[in-house]
Image 1 (cartoon, rainbow over the protein chains, first blue to last red):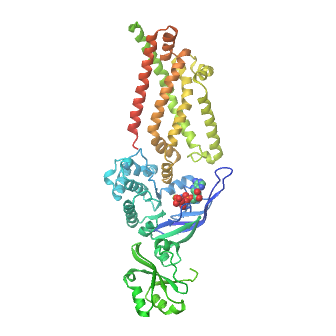
Image 2: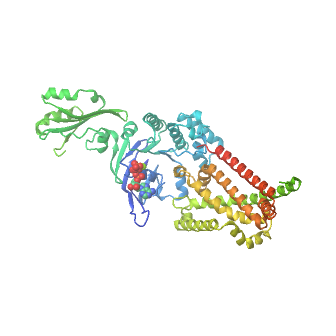
Image 3: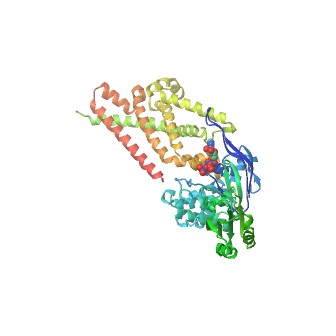
Length: 333
Length: 228
Ligand SMILES: Nc1ncnc2c1ncn2[C@@H]1O[C@H](COP(=O)(O)OP(=O)(O)OP(=O)(O)O)[C@@H](O)[C@H]1O
Ligand SMILES: [Mg+2]
């Protein structure tokens, strides 16, 4: 649905003494149809720049952006405006027009595309119902709570039936409970409307709650990207570690440290106890976490086994046989 | 104080009518051109919706700089000097420089840059996020200017307008001293030259009442328009 290839974006220096800021340095990214794709990264990593490039609010210095099969970077201004009708956007600070009622805000995009008044009214009522604000159509944004404002923002973005929804920190100005309900709403809309969602966030919790795929951006480059469950199966994955922080404990020198990942029914099994019993070894748990990720119950554990890797070959093979994902962490770790 | 109301009331009524006439004419042109200049000042600035008219950033920068320069000239001349300088111009378009209609010319020229700067301030106060949201929906530049910038700035623009009306009232009194007629003319001719304080005080009271009413109405309208 979205394909970003070798995207570069640099901002020219603000004044004679300033330097050029290279916000994106060759970013590649693919968002599949119907995904909820999360982009995470530290402040200044280039997340917002990347997202704003997707609908060309920011024109990239080079590279291409294809949305729904159309290369946006080749479009002229008028064609680009039309293409934007198919890409909804939700903002951290809602960006609702204070001079318009809720319904009028939702209708704004339809006004732009020239939909007639009656059809606009009908459509705004429909999407407002969808986000649970059917009864607030004639309120002004200032009369709404933050969560309600964001629902209006989402309704506005959806009014034109876009294939893609972009969201830059849509929940970052909301309290945890409201964040929860907005995330639920996005997930629901993704499921019922099939709209592809690309969202930017600095909260791993958001990825954990709703994302099917995620990418990590560092210094303007995507350093990791993929299906969330696959990433969790990759012990070196920085995203997986951020989702499941296991701490920094490394174990004693000479011992073997392994990390295991388990999903589904395996999460309910007494893995450590069974291993100690079967092989008569003292397993030390260095870190562990069990959580629900994209509707899967997933656990991750870091274990310390006494002795070298070789001496633990049999128990490790046994763990692998039982369907667990096992990674032997090198001594250098 | 011996006041002959029978004589004074018709004189004052005529004067107030003249003042309203010159301010009214000036106001119409001030609104049209002040809004236009204010919008251009904001939109041709860096990051504005017209920062690159016809695809040229340079052209945007030039328009912005030239407009800013002209506006500043308009703002730096004291009104009385502006009026004298504009006498040939006023004669050219009205045929005379005497009377309220003629006075509307320098009043307009003085008020446009003043109002334009206030409009500029009002438009700059509109959150850039709103413009971004409109752009993300595929809005044209004209739509952004009308439906986002001007629509959101409406309350501030109404207040800017009242400030401009009050300035115009002030200027119109000065215009009165060189043949425009109006309330200022009465205050000077009767109050100053004939030492008739009753005229002076009455005109002061009229001016105070007009300013209060203008401000009250503007504040009420602005409050009604604002849904922040
Ligand atoms: N309009 C701009 N002009 C100049 N530099 C910019 C501009 N926008 C962003 N940058 C720079 O580009 C880099 C990436 O910024 P960006 O806003 O994309 O980061 P971010 O990952 O969204 O950060 P945050 O989490 O703080 O929002 C930063 O170094 C920033 O200073
Ligand atoms: Mg950002």
